[in-house]
Structures are given as C-alpha cells and as structure tokens.
Image (cartoon, rainbow, N blue to C red; front, side, top):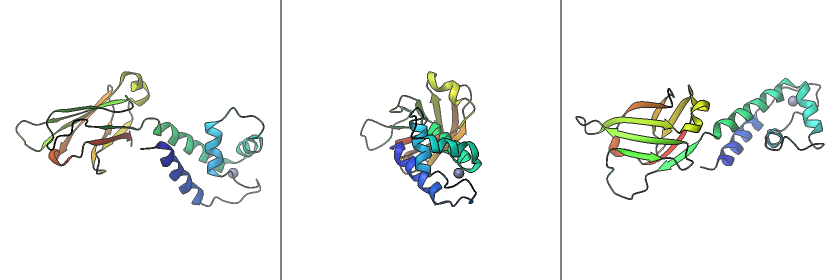
Length: 173
Ligand SMILES: [Zn+2]
C-alpha cells in the first residue's frame, strides 16, 4: 500500500472539516501543513505559514495530527506468502517486505482451524514500538490480531486459519 495515498486521503478528510473563523486570516490548508513537515528546512516561502502556526491553536493541532499520522505510517508494512500453493501449510513464517516484522501463524494440533498468530518486531524498531497497539489484517481486510507489543512481540488466538488470505498488512492500531 502506498503511504502517500493514505496521507492524501487523510488530508482530504481534514480539509473537508470546516474550522472556526478567527482574526488570524486564512487557516493553513492541510496540504501545506503536510508540505511543511516534508520540507521543514525550506526558508522564506514558509514564513507566513510559520507565523500563522505560532498564533493559531487550530492549525497547530492539525499539524500535530498530520505529523503523528506520518510517524505511524512509517510503521506500516506488508508481507505475503511467496509460495503459490492452494492450501496453506502450518506453521507459516512470513517476514514483511519492509523488514520491520515477522508474522508467524501456528495451528493448534488438536483444533484443525484455529491457532496462534504472533507478530515479532525486528530489533531496530523495538524501542519505538514497545507498548504500542498493533493490528494485523489479511488480504480480505479481516483482522487477525490487535494487541499491545510487549518484549518486542505479541501473540493472539486466531480462528478460521484455512480462510486466511496470506497478504498481510501490519500497522499501529
Ligand atoms: Zn489556523
């Protein structure tokens, strides 16, 4: 998934929200706030924007929300099973494409169609994600896991193993 598309959609949603009129002049369009976060070192052309930000709590709050969503999007990652077989075999161990996580799904021996899904955070992301609630969805958008990272990983019981579509999206919840 292209994170720029997600951000664009988020910005459009924010853009549709009418903010209260004040005596500060025009509020800063979300696209401009986004641009400011992407290229904060550009001098001169951002002067008016920065001036408005120092006086306008509405735009400042919006800037923080955009910044937070950008940070969270940095922790999105996708993974898919590489082998093309009709039936899923267990356990599955799938590293995500961006190298941030490993998804493992194990089946309970005694229960055909249920098991445990584990999300492991790779070493260099552990400090940033410790204590964060993460979500894993499959190729149909079905949620397989939503829980807090502890000690660099988290596990949850998952039902309906055979209907899992092994294209995974991992993201902060
Ligand atoms: Zn404003």
